[in-house]
Length: 213
Ligand code: GRF
Image 1: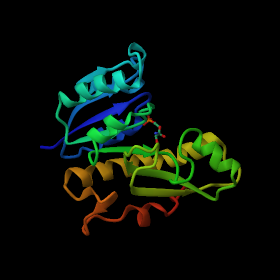
Image 2: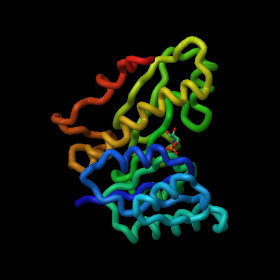
Image 3: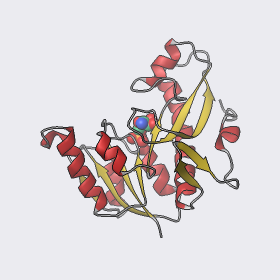
């Protein structure tokens, strides 16, 4: 059975959605850069191995990334899943996991890379917002796009109401993408995400606003 390592920094709701999806995969470990990440508690409760590689204990990004890679590679995962992992990664680290590390970002990339995506979408007057899952490249939130889900921005939306609507789609999209990867339907080829013909394109499904929106 293929295995994944999930990296988190906080709440870990995306990690949880992947674990709860019951995918035919071994969750080899959940690793956090923050000892107090709430998601670690849930992972431990599920009997999943957890580890903390605290970035504050390292002199710089290179040293931290080396320690993190060593911790990940102990498990020899097929896929590394960044799920709310809030660290900028060094080029060497990204290269090491090229084609086997994915990230979820709460905007319709390439719009709104970085932080505060929902507030920025509101400030810009966007009528749609959403989420992107992408392969990780050297460019922050700039790697090849795998799948996206869009939601409407509704009158009266606040940062938190929009975040909640997007998060609901995150929890649908991320397990689906992990499934494609472990089933061998998804790969990185010539700098683009390639999805096999039998994988259902997610965008056409998830662009439809949910009934209660
Ligand atoms: C999510 O919105 C994710 O897209 C972003 O950070 C948030 C993490 O949430 N990268 P959680 O820790 O998965 O609950």
